[in-house]
Length: 236
Ligand SMILES: Nc1ncnc2c1ncn2[C@@H]1O[C@H](COP(=O)(O)OP(=O)(O)O)[C@@H](O)[C@H]1O
Ligand SMILES: [Mg+2]
Image 1 (cartoon, rainbow, N blue to C red):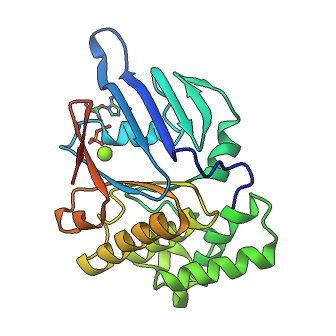
Image 2 (cartoon, rainbow, N blue to C red):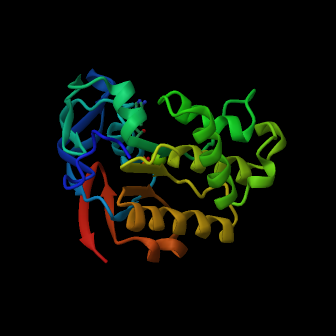
């Protein structure tokens, strides 16, 4: 676990986030005024039509797409005030966050195992420990037998499961996933969602999953609807 994590603080708190792309007559207000709070130990589904601002919100929380204004606090640490970084975002991201996007984006010249290991080694996890955890995660995700293959030799679904293993490697306190099951069949999609729920509940992480898959909504503790850049919080 991260020594710097505050276990009692919410996984993430977003306050009055606004994101405007472009300027003048090309301006797009992607997020109008979004506030949310996700506790550790809960898994939250983010729903909403295409173009409603889900990815913008998720990538803002992922610290890769800074907001125009508003605050983001992760694990009790204020990290962004508008576009202004309050911590070293790169190292904070590596230590606290795990993401899975629609595309796996594995490093093409590293094997499945190496792709997972490297996520830990850049955080100074000793190589033997990183290797053991990578093997365990790949097995847990059903791709243990593919450990020594390059991404090119894996199917889209297998690559995505390696990406999930990589996202979980550093025991993140907040996991962000943008349509992570889009490339998976129904059964694999459900397995990945259930794994996320298990990580939220057993490892006390906060998990936010953007999804269109209405067959797996039952894994969420609650869902949050995004419409035209505004969040509607609701209880299931
Ligand atoms: N890089 C960008 N530049 C300009 N507009 C963008 C950019 N990314 C997203 N948008 C616009 O912001 C709005 C929200 O997009 P997005 O967050 O991708 O929605 P979703 O993930 O819900 O489909 C859309 O109108 C989209 O066209
Ligand atoms: Mg999107």
